[in-house]
Length: 634
Ligand code: AMP
Image (cartoon, rainbow, N blue to C red; front, side, top):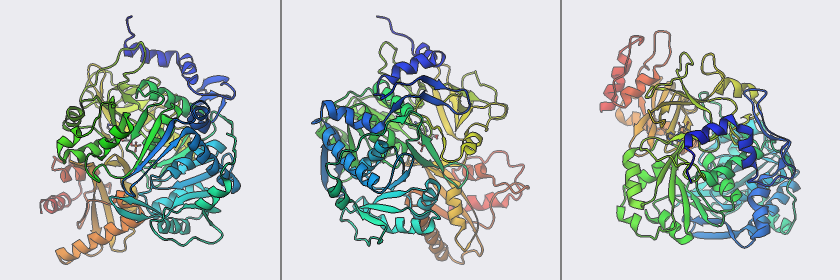
């Protein structure tokens, strides 16, 4: 049988859009089938599977529990606390129903927001699925964020209730969550009515009377409760997930129910090649989009067991991930290039210590995958390494190589490129200044997507349609297209290469951070008059943040400078979280600016990376860059 070239298949997904996605919609259960596949009549908004009613929790849990209740659904391993738990689909359903009854008991219902600030423990997944079950909108905030980051998200999401825990743990170090949460609630103008606390017994805490509730007690009370799934129209919001952009204020990326379920189910089969009954292992965190799509919802919707891991890739030793692959017969694995670069520093024979015969592929995403890292891990594991490019906003891969579409030719991988546009994404490269389509190979342009975005992508920015339109759809002159804010180029064979962000977002170890947020935090320090934060290349983390601060008074000695640097770093740790801490804070007397006062960020970044700073004709005072050069040479 001859197979269809991928390009033809991709083209059909766009030209025959409704028929294409109507077929995919059959992968999930609908209470009432969709009346219309895509309503794209009000660009840039798109509504998928209009009129259909469904439920994410039903599709992820109940429908599997009904037919194979004893099969594994959620495997939790913590090398931090030395514990492993395995939940079958029936057990998972019981836990989710108890959590759903807990939430409903506090008056949480359809459309209410629930903020989840938790470490990688099963209760975090129960809480997400419980929200999905009753139609509440969850907003998971990464546990590595601290009080100020958390407060801004509480204010924006205005949750009725928060689910949290006493502490997380990383590399054996306990990280108390409760004081950060209490401070965030104190800072926020919005106050949640209740906080459900999971007490892991890691760090003692004082419950706030009248607000804090004990999860274990509520679980006992509600154990055995039956809580039916709320049948929601496909376009009902399922969750919001905050992500950084150009401004200091994070955006709540809002997703739907039906489109997301269909997109994930399709990707699990065609992109990841997973099979129901097998085990999927993503090393991400539930606080990021990969955790939402490929720790919780995707694998479960597809009927796979998902392995949730609390721990680092190097403890108790650098073979821990592979020991889990062996023990749980993982077939599909998902991680980030930084995790692999961390492993690369360790003994390569560790890759051979365990039986990895179950593993079919390793998917890597979140940041550029460099050739040496890809080759090292590919040779070490002997399985295909699949780079995939996407964003919090898209919810599932935009560029990769789908190897599991029946009857369609598999696109070979090409080192350095995540691949080609996935079905449903009408991707273009545009000239940033003119908005013209760049049709010739190897031209650098902005990577954009034509309206409508496929199922699973963001619906809007939570509570701010105008921001959704102005941020994402009006950045290229004369064209209403969705901007990814990534530079890219395409080779003659159609492979896309990602060349960095067009905005002030930086990517540290696959974590997306806004330099503005870090700048706002540092400039709040009483001694700092002005600050610029840039991302500079780093061999391990891809990029690290580097801060250049203009102090009101220059520290008199190197020791004083070190002490001030320490204070500023502590401030970032306490307000934003250690994830946002710059690798260095360097003190300068002025920042490189144009005569009109605009910061020359790219010049600063280039100098910090030891590159040529480019055209400096607009630079006001050349001394500014000289200072930076001298400081970096020290
Ligand atoms: P996030 O929304 O946190 O997932 O970050 C998305 C951003 O990470 C993208 O806009 C890219 O800048 C970067 N990114 C994600 N995946 C890749 C990849 N495979 N290759 C290069 N950059 C990537």
